Image (cartoon, rainbow, N blue to C red):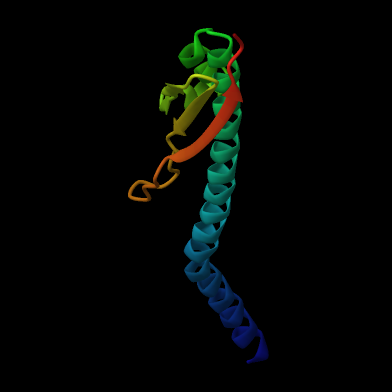
Length: 118
């Protein structure tokens, strides 16, 4: 009789693991999504600084801003510039991609200001 009980217990453990697996997958996806959000925010900061540097030198700041972002994020990137008398400010907006449909996030927005080169 002990043999039959052990075999049954092994099957129960497998069933419990299968029930817990979706929770583990959800936690893993959430961790990867958090990393993706942080990476996108870092890319937005780099794009804003690059765009502001280019605009301060009267360069093509929009193209330089997009070039500073990873190619798979560049399509969802915008970098409008605000030109002042002595400085230029560029605000980079990068769309945060979602791993799971239905998980939508606001875009990452970073701003950089540089003195104008006269």
